[in-house]
Length: 125
Image (cartoon, rainbow, N blue to C red; front, side, top):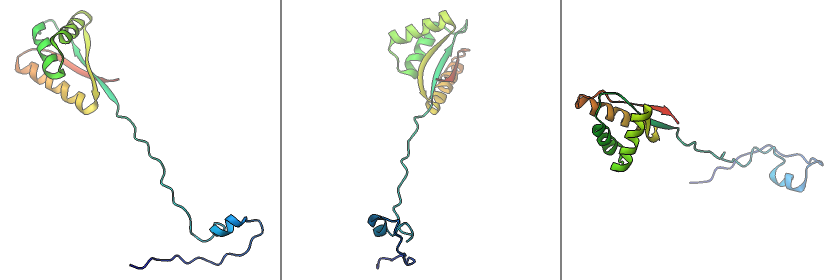
């Protein structure tokens, strides 16, 4: 394959240009350097998964749910369950949007399958 040469208009001598400018063609030859702009990748937004207290779901079921869907130890799950019980709401974890949405749906579906009114939601961190 033969390289393609760009044709440029003749460059007239301009006394205001430096020797370096003349070597580059004074910016008039149509030849230049293309620079790729630096792109920055933004970190994804994070969301808190929150569990809400109710008066009907057994504490043991909440602990089981926290262990199953949030991979908590029994000690951590018990601590979060007591926080939810005493304060009405507790953070189960912080995730990207898709992961948080999936976990909320899994918890609600699991609770419904076991006929518990347990509620789980998410909010932007």
